[in-house]
Image 1 (cartoon, rainbow, N blue to C red):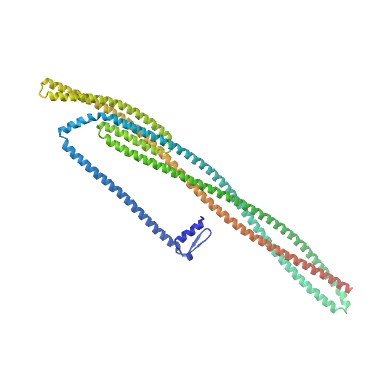
Image 2 (cartoon, rainbow, N blue to C red; image 1 turned 30 degrees about the vertical axis):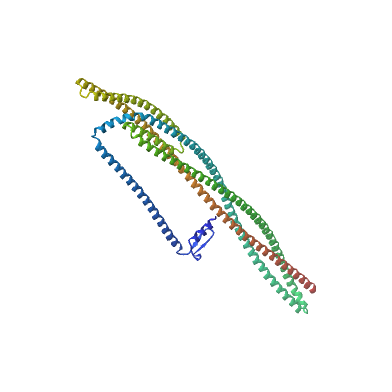
Length: 557
């Protein structure tokens, strides 16, 4: 659809009166006050849109705040319930015994949990491989887009060169046009001068005719007086000589006029050749215009392809975001299950889940970074080694816990059997308690060592996340540069379209001026033909006068 048609549709949709505006070739002309009315309507429409947008934003923020407050209220209720239950049960001896015995009973479940975590790690690795394949495909598409961009840049350079050449040709044509106009003005001035000379000659001719008539009357009156005629013969001969001299002058002027006519004809042929050259140049400009239109259509098709690829990228990004949300939900469920373990083991597993969640976030953010994926694989292998080492340590701790549980059971049996034993048995009991305390200290030391290792792992993950964030910022900058280049290409296409329109307008003006010049040349040719007719008539009349003079002389002789 043309821009003019689009403007007409917009104005008809506004339901304006047809007497209030007029649509031209490149502008729309409004009556006084119409633009102010349109601006007022535009301001009212913009204010309505902004008010609606503000209302939607405020409603969304209010809903989010209400949901947050509901979650906080539910959390407070749960905390209050748990705190009340804990305050009731913390001094109950059976609860104390239950808290001491329950961790020992859950030792057997750790292997099952480790197996489940290994299954989760395998699933995460499979997803990681899929994401790598998607990243390779995206990288290939990016390279193709970059190559197309380079091709477009080369084509734009060629088009700019052609446009510069066309502008130079246009300047040359304008200069030639000015020269031709100056020559035409000179020719018009000369033609006017020649017309004035022809009028003067005609006036002289009339005078001569009148003079000849007077002479004839005198000859008729003085036929009886030959003496007077003989005396006047000398004067008549002198006058005839003067007339002959004037005739010779007129012949010279006629020859000059014929030469000037030839010069005018030569110049007219030159003008015709120049007009033919201008027509050929106009045809070349039309060819260049068609080439530029074809290039613009190609550019539009390529831009559409780029938009399609961009939409596909956004769809893949949304899919990855959905997968990350699912993974985060699964991690939350795992965290709730792991809370039942010991406090120290819970901390370790929460850190591992946080590391997995960060890894998932890193996978989402690594749309254009294959090297970082390899680094993550190395980190995952290190985490597996750490997990294996932790498994060994946990197995050792499980064995120690089992031994301690067996010893505690034996102590319980002994305590039930020997509640009222001697002091020796009490000493043995105190020794056993000391041994249990030493074993607890050893377990605490091992847990501290594991915490140190986990802190090292956290530091490594934090450094990796910082590097990933930097690379993501670089990718965003690259994307912004691509969008800017796209906008620049669109602006260039618009400028080319405007220049093509201006060239068409200039071409139309040049054709109109060419038609005017042709009509003026035809008028000049008609004037030259009329001047030739007048000259031929003048020569015929002068010849007739000569014949009459000879007859008069012969009769007088």
